[in-house]
Amino acid sequence: MDVSNFDYDLPSELIAQEPLPNRGDSRLLLLDRKNHKIEHSYFRSLGTYLKTGDTLVFNDTRVIPARLIGQRRDSGGKIEVVLLKKLEQNKNRCTWEVLLKPGRRARPGKELVFGDGRLRAAVVESTEEGGRILSFHYEGIFEEVLAQLGTLPLPPYIKKQLKDSERYQTVYSRLEGSVAAPTAGLHFTPEKLETLRDMGINTVFITLHVGLGTFRPVKVQQVEEHKMHEEYYSVSPETAALLNKCLEQNSRIIAVGTTSCRVLETIRRKEGFIPGSGWTGIFIYPGYKFQAIDGLLTNFHLPRSTLIMLVSAFGGRDLVMRAYQEAVENRYRFYSFGDAMLIL
Image 1 (cartoon, rainbow, N blue to C red):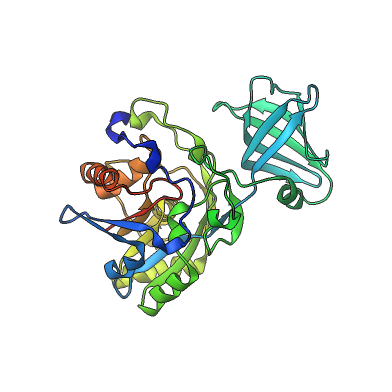
Image 2 (spheres, rainbow, N blue to C red):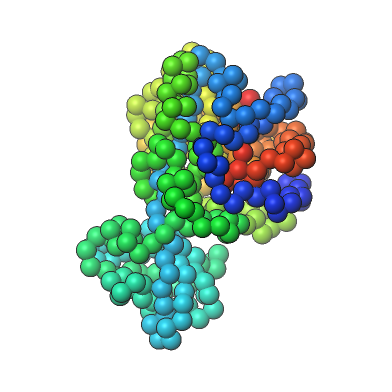
């Protein structure tokens, strides 16, 4: 399957550069898989398309201040580091896989300094994807040092500075570990969640820490040749029990975001949903047979990305690409701070 099947033209002015003043004011495109219909609405009307007994599954990960600006110790040259995946942590030392730029001179053995020197790092090795492995040294607690020196790593297509960093966190974010937000959840407010619960809609939470794949483009021409990244997930026994109850009652399970979808498809077995934690590298593209979800709430994704491939697998490629074209024609807002799509 050629990657070009997931390409589309997007005017740059439709890439949302900042969140709307109110989270719930986004537009909502409804995609009806059964009847191949597309409907245009607003996120505040989400409850109109749900019914009593439906279960929404949210990813409660929280974005860490993973972007660090430092200097090369030998030359003083500026360097930018984005933490991607923690590999090891001991007292006063931890090792991370990172993206780094400029990377040409960041060879193994080079030393980096951040802030007032409270945080230092040595380049250990290069990765196959062009990143680096860094060994950090510090005094105190790494998370506290990072909170003082780091900033949120907004996607490269967002050029504006974010005034309130909490707008790149979901209102239910809880467990720190991601380098990008599960953006389908950014539309929800505490009031919206309460309203849905009052309607008889169930809400449950899983965790998937968004990592390297968010920043890795699909470089191969054939979709099947792409190697998916792995991300850490966790599902409690209580959540798995609630999901299994949905199966028993034949009620709908709706994933809020592609991250929730990937976790649910990872833990679904013949006997039901299996709780636990681990790493998932599941790659979902057209031809995949879904076992876990009945609906998907998601944002509009980049062309040729693994995310639009997942959405196309669930909604049908032709219908999804037609929906994207209509979204462009109707001037929807795209990507992280953009509008939403509900596929049922």
